[in-house]
Length: 127
Image 1 (cartoon, rainbow, N blue to C red):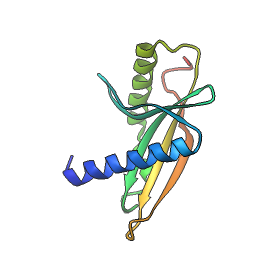
Image 2: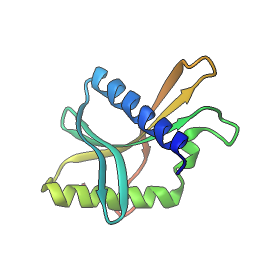
Image 3: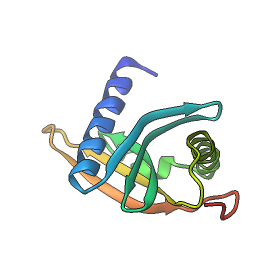
Image 4: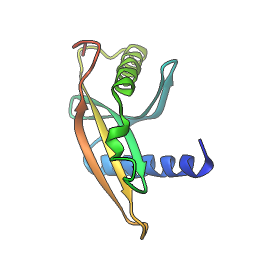
């Protein structure tokens, strides 16, 4: 990944964490990693665990940011969530997968589109 894209991605994750915190979420972990990959943000609100994929873009020339979360990536997120749950010993907890789209405008302002329940668990209802 190029330096610019890495910086943009990290900046987007910073904005996402700030947004989630302001909206009553507790950030449990950033950049959770296991053998299947990485979850950008793991947060919770009330009694629900939220796995968040952050997509930051400067243009929608190649589609909207959420469109980059393919079926294959959803399957990967499902495995990542299972690893997190197992590793942290969480059982019988309500979980969901959200996407935060961050669009940066030419004047350096930005907007956030929070898509709750963006996709469902693929490997069954194990939460």
